Amino acid sequence: MNPGDVRPPVVAGLFYPEDPSELAGAVDALLDLAEPRPAADVRALVAPHAGYTFSGPVAASAFLLAPRAARVVLLGPSHFVPLDGLAVSGADAWATPLGKVPVADDLREAALVAGAVVDDAPHARDHALEVELPFLQRACPDGLEVLPVAVGHTRPEQVAALIEALDAFVVVSTDLSHYLDDARARQVDGETAEAIVRRDPGAIGDDAACGVFALRGLVEHARKRDLEVELLDLCTSADTGGGPERVVGYGAFAVSSLSRHPVSDTSGSASAVSIDERANVPEGVGLFEP
Image: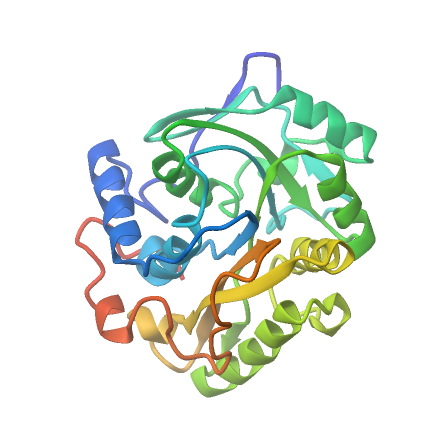
């Protein structure tokens, strides 16, 4: 991208509402439904990135803990472009229907020193980082800058080194298992959640999450820094309107320097928002991609 370029929204109307008022109302309603928790010294979040109807309640349970003002490093997969290493966006801002979010140039420069490259191709049509922005825009009303980073094939240590090099809040965007039957997905996702909570990146399987490389890197960072990782919510798309034959798993986690809340059951049952509440996701969220 050229200086001054803005990365436009590419999945508005598909994964989340395109109308600004409708989108703001939908995100606010999801945040209102999420269970309030103490937010002592949260350093990072893990949130899913499916259509808001399917993963919005789980994502909201994470973003409810975001600081009101934040500089956020967004880490997620490249779904469509093969990628080795770390690719930062060259745009000056990313846009959603809620407005433009500035990209922090100093964080980008620090990421380049840490081994990332500027490459907009992985970001051009990927939804993984974009769908997190409206949540951040509503959860961080006092100021928001971001650094979008697509994470390809990397060692956990490489991603952890990037996180160490950047003085910023971290959001890892990832779904969990894909297209298993519901019972098997809950088993697999429960095992993945246990590995995340015990800070064991090597126990997170290659197929455990679409953002596995970013996820392993954050878990490695938490291990090295002796940070607490807590499960906030865990469910599948079968809990939010999808069929049980082929589901996608969704998990939300918080990384902090202090233990804030008992770790949730990792069996795959809903925790932060009840299944009954999930069935009544607010109108306006839209029935989008799982």
